[in-house]
Image (cartoon, rainbow, N blue to C red):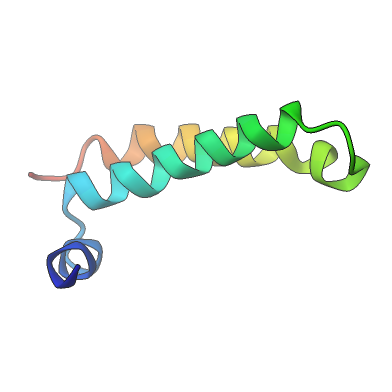
Length: 62
């Protein structure tokens, strides 16, 4: 776990890709739930933020 947080602070690729993937998955889950309109409303923004974050962090060093 310490290695994960050190990687975030040093801008390493794998921890940031994991965070971006979690954002994308959370956005898709927000999109599929039928109960809360507010959560559904922000789902596209969360998916977009995760996708842009994944594109940016894929250029970080290993």
